[in-house]
Image 1 (cartoon, rainbow, N blue to C red):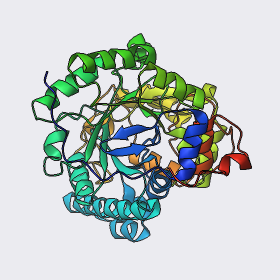
Image 2: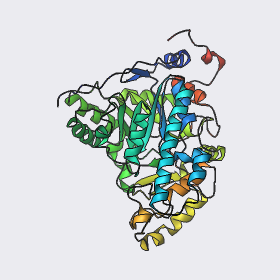
Image 3: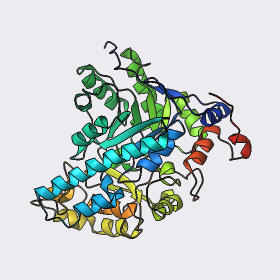
Image 4: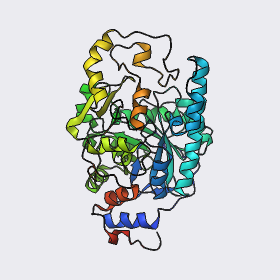
Length: 419
């Protein structure tokens, strides 16, 4: 495989002096995405609405990569919700909801950009499994998003969707070296390389997981000690090791984790749950408390309505659903349409009657979680105790702790004058 030239580079945005000071104190390495030098911490995309402009903008403002989740962002905009509530079910209602979500996406990108103050990098996370996959990517690129991150499926067509925007970084989320090899070889035919690749461990991450079955979550091929060196070895054999940095994701909670993963060959790490519970997280405070107070024994894996394994917290709704899951699956049948007229997923276990898939409206349950409904919500969460336990702290505090590995003190706030 020959090396493929990267597309047009961007003007570097320097890491703020304060963040660079933390990086220096901890002895960690920054990483480069295109021409941008960034903190080695990526904030993962979390839907629906958990990572929107407040969180992504805050992370970017400190020199990191902040990520907006694209799914159903209208829920952060009362005027768009009013516009789409109470519509007569049908295609016109779906079109109105889709249009509202694309408008919300544009608003969120603009608001995040303003909050970031020209620092860091902003990304959009789009699930390959959603029906608005293509339109969401197109709109985000039109709005000048810096990077597009895609998980929940293989984004083999992402280079085609981004062809008119060579300045945008493209980042697939994969789980093992085999996935890396497949995506890189497919993209090479389209004259494009991934600008980075997220290697997400399905036994540790929250939300939808990159494995075919729940039983596969324990497969050692997903272990970072295997997946990262094997992916690096493939990239090296292809002559592109220096062009495609790897980002480790799943269960990362401390500077020691980052040191270990950089030692294995990761350029950066991605965290979701620790960012979701920050002060700047875009979900309701009650949502944050549910995640912060949960322990690993409260987590459960199940098959989502998207047909993928998922990890979430046992809450009253999820416990009740799981007790009825087998019965609901046994009577599953295809419906004539989505009862909410949203059709958020390209394939939906509830709408399409797939008997081995989840049988609930995922948009309803995630929306309930977003607004802090602890009885009806579906609360995705990754494995592991959080850096501040059950405390809700700022993005600044989280990054400082992760980068320095030290308790927060006034001394750590004294940064040099320049980077």
